[in-house]
Image: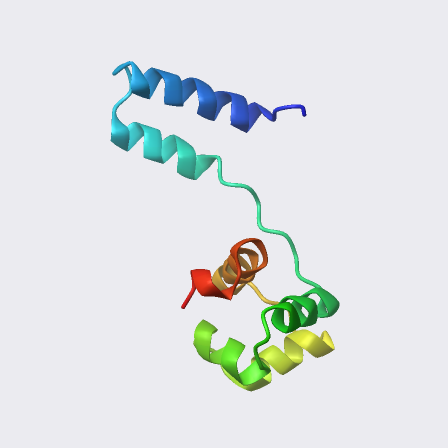
Length: 101
């Protein structure tokens, strides 16, 4: 598997941190800068994530602190999740709903 530049930089900084040449705050700042981009979510993908986690539109809306109609609009393609909602969908997709509740 080929490493990305961000992965290589992060690995180098981790090594420098372990040897005491880079402090913990700088290490965290580098890790935050190298966060992967969050993908766009299609209506089909949102439905799939929700069904895989066996939750209703209302339950997903409650977890995200948004209205159920917003989730309905996402699933119809009338609106797209943005910002924190995209990040929360990413977490649910990767780690499951248990990561948020």
